[in-house]
Length: 212
Image 1: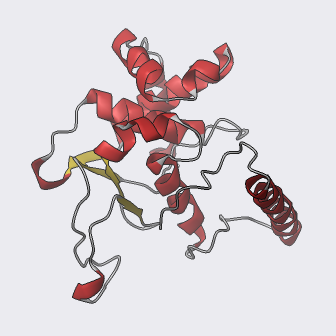
Image 2: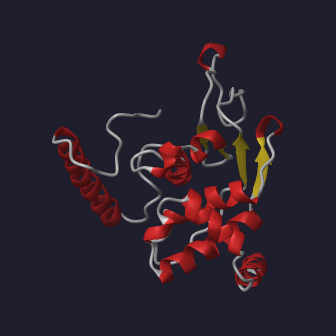
Image 3: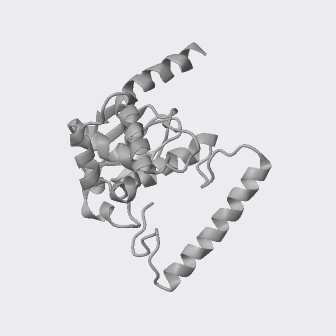
């Protein structure tokens, strides 16, 4: 397809450019996982960031100014989620990332309709046919630098979850065999996390905090 060819060519041109040193400094300070990655993983993460920063529409909510540091930090956490995939994944169905300075008041939209009493301030949200919305204060705070609490990963995971049209905890999976394997793994890992929480063992989850 001509569009796919042009997109691949554009991406090749983007990733052929040197990764800015200032961006690498942002990753060291802002993205907790970055320091633990090997050379190949870092290169793949940086390639992802170059594409996402250039391709997505970045918008600031309520007049908030979105700069390169914000784009790189958010893209870095989204990139962490893709490192285990066999092929690069650039969230092609996601067009817009909206960043607010802090908590924001949601509005009814074509993606979601709520009675006024349910429109309480939020820190983030994501829609499979719409934007990912994030609070920068929540992402840049110290809580993001410890395990178990990361708004960016949380909302990008919701976006992936909804690719099949349902936000039900299961991403788009092709084939009954793969769906069965997915559910087996998820159930086993969930039970392990529950056991670790009960025994107060360190895990990827923050048992002292929950987020809707």
